[in-house]
Amino acid sequence: MKKEEAQKRIQELRAKTEYYANKYYDEDSPEITDFEYDMLMVELRNLEAEYPDLIDKNSLTQKVGGHVKEGFEKVEHEVPLQSLQDVFTIEDLRLFDTRVRKETEKEQIEYTVEAKIDGLSVALEYVDGKFVRGATRGDGQIGEDVTANLKTIKNIPKELKEKVNIIVRGEVFISKEDFEKMNEEQEILEEKTFANARNAAAGSLRQLDSKKTAKRPLDIYIFNVQRLTDNPFNSHYEQLIYLEKLGFNVNVVKKRCVGIESAIKEIERIGEIRADLGFGTDGAVIKVDNLELREILGTNFKTPRWAIAYKYPPERKETLLKDITCQVGRTGAITPMAILEPVKLAGSTISKTTLHNEDFIIAKDLKIGDHVIIQKAGDVIPEVVEVVKEKRTGEEKEFIMPDTCPVCGGPAVRENRRSCNKVYRNRM
Image (cartoon, rainbow, N blue to C red):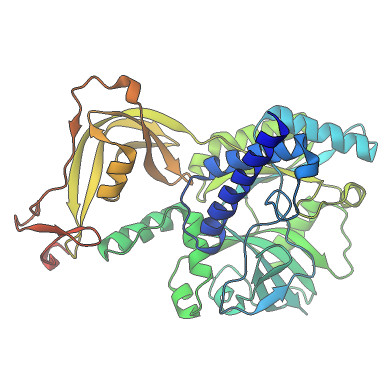
């Protein structure tokens, strides 16, 4: 690609990633999948690497996404809450290890491998063992003071078992089971369902009214010591064990590995069991365990040079869209449902999923009888991704939203969405 073409494409990618990052981080309302966003970032990063004179400090390759929401007090992080460099191949993990060994002049490195929790990153500060403040990551330097909201989370201790001064970093999340229940309740109330568990957790934590946050099933796993007065440890893994002793709910999927091949085996093991984990995860994090070596390796502005995140490819399956039926909610809203040829996906058998609304069906160009690709959004909700149009035979049927309610036979009208003209309280 010529430089002029590269410059134009870089500008396009920066605009797209800024837009989608704003939807994801600031509005908690993503418009594309994590994998699609990751691929845009990979393309942007590769082009900037090829043409380093085109790198801009405002590019999302150079900064952490996210801003402080209006209504929250700003918190300057004493230790920046950085992001992680994502990689997508096993070979990239080996290249990471080669660089680490070269820069530290070590023949072999001990790593800690942890499941990457799909949630919202926060910092918790304790003085003399008492919880005094909590903040979101924000842009890594400045976050939002959400102390009152964090105090509603049962697994965040208000007082530790030792009177220490410590700042820890954790991930606020909603379990897969609780997330499914939340969306079921949203459908019953005719409210907008959440796209994935991560954004449900983020939206819940960033409520201006902590009473609303208290009603959401938020949980947390702590995964790092940001600062500890008189720190006696030189091992990240040993710090995690210490955090458990203090009373923190620490990431349950963690293992110390000697050498990169051992770490790769653990990453592959996590990939095999992730469908059975109680929380959403889209990857595994590999960290240099020795804290002195981390100091040698240092950090970039956005990412540490001693850690990397391996992202698992989303599991996708092809199946048949056998039919589209309509489900009537408690208040009468009509929601189209895909009836699928049952298929095993990410640990469960999928036979139906929501198609959200008429606009979704039109945008995806869905027809009854189509072969479709489905995946689980955030490893939780099954969704129709696309149609396999080359398999169309011409016998597929267009779906038309009904003009009458499938429950009462009354007229169905489209306002913001199609709904029955009655509220069916007898269906509660």
